[in-house]
Length: 78
Image (cartoon, rainbow, N blue to C red; front, side, top):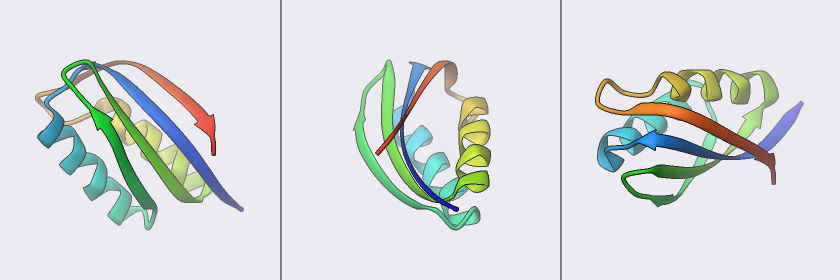
């Protein structure tokens, strides 16, 4: 089943690092990704693909790259 989801990841962000990390994970999971706003406190991303893989993307990004700390995730449908 295909799912489209919007995520807002909150915490301590290094935008370049987090966006590169998210794009890499999306490619590995064969998801389409759109990057929205990103600043030192949050990053907004939208992904589309198999729903189990969207779940895996959320889990991977919750761990984030080594220089980001994810404290909260908001997920909504598109």
